[in-house]
Length: 184
View 1 (cartoon, one colour):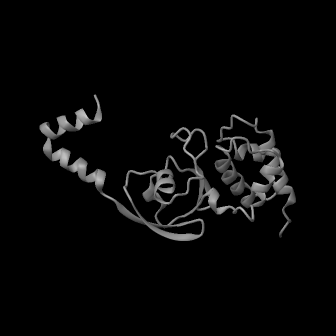
View 2: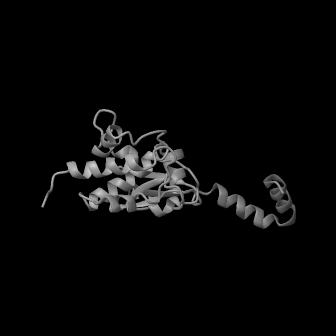
View 3: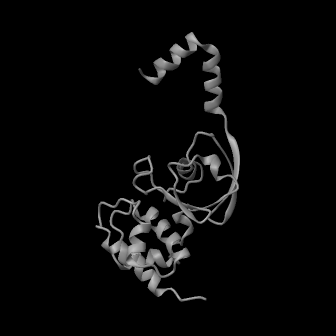
């Protein structure tokens, strides 16, 4: 049954439920959160995912939708210091939180050390998975500036990359960790 047929049938058979569903689909709520260091206030339908909010309302298209079910890691962002799959989080859950996307890492003039390392090591091929992997790697290095190869592999284990075979990605992350100054 097509959606149009379903809504026509529902409208005829149960007009009250039809009106309620129509209201829910058009209702928006206001949420306030920090995105890449800037406080934003945005109206969003409550059923939207954080991924959809980032891409469609805020224009932050670096975060990608791959599978839509949290399996590929392409939509990974950092929320309150932890990597999350933006396709699995409803947008209202961002209320009062801090969210970082790949757009917040660096810019065209000053790349983040991870971004530069990915370029130097040839860890960027098609680039579809790269934003999510960068965000997971950033979270790892923020908490553990000098990770082992196994820790790096663990941090990116939720990401699927069809181009590089992961070796260049692991090397790029390890190299970034090695170049960081030890601060105690």
